[in-house]
Length: 419
Image (tube, rainbow, N blue to C red; front, side, top):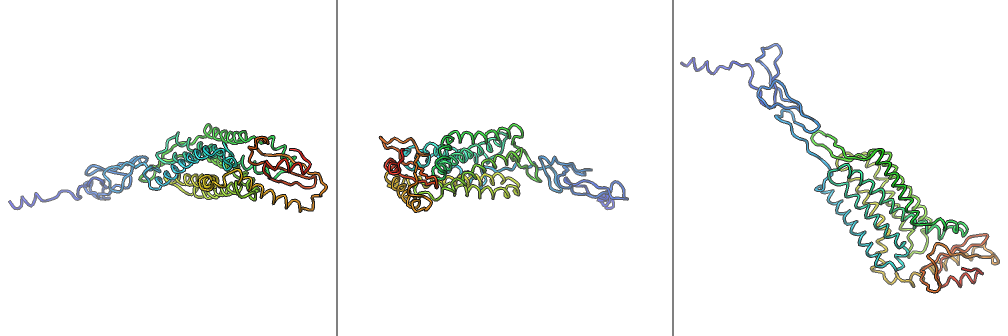
């Protein structure tokens, strides 16, 4: 009886059973019933006992570790709204949108004050609205991308920021026209100076570039598989078109910078030349930094890189152009009056005229001609005009003087000229 029991314990197999996640590999030179149990390799699985082979996973959507009994579906990865960094950037973008609309309301309420008029009046409102569009475009860089989202975010940023820079360009050209040309050249340029036409042409050219981009090689969404994740991202379609859009905006900004840099020494109060210069410098620094970072960055945080640069350049313009004006409107009301404005310009014009009188190249007997340039319509009866740029020149040397309207007629009468 004991011998029978011992025989029941005899194992007739020379190899144990292979567990799920393994496959049988017959030992070389041995009987078929003798084999080794080998773990399935990565991205392969087996879910049966004594499986003869492992089955591969679809690596586009799934993955598996070595010795797996099933495939694991890859997780979708993108720059999401729940990401901590994304929350911070969205908060900054939302704050920027709120600030621009608050400033629009503030500027509309104080539209008749010298600060708002010196800022360009309705043009500064258009600048703020275009900045709001730039902030809104950053929100489209967050979340799971779609084809429409990938297209709209770049086009919206390109058009809105181009409109913003075009408005600044108009103000830069006005400064240059008022103070840095001889009267003959100034008169010719005045006929060509049409602010809204200039803005429309600049934005229109960017619209043409964006339209060609969308028609010929449009941006879109794509999925890029990684070992354990699937990255949902936007591809730009044509990096040449992407670069052309950014390059065109940079060209306008460069012109703004050049014009504003020439006018940086104008009167301190209400002088936008310095603010334009600083704003454009921030823009250039941020985008020059962006290029190498964008080229070397991969993964879900690539949209965050462009988002950060857009926020920096937008906040740079908002801070340099509008925060000082808001400060004057709210906390320095005594300087936001016609009398204070006249005083500042009169002091500057007096200093300019004193310096020019000492110039040896100007003869006392030389005829001096005066002409009103780059000013709103002058109504001497109502005296509503805040300031007029008066260009006075002799055949030998040009003189640029800025004086209040109430002194304009007397000044020109003393110089044997008529207004």
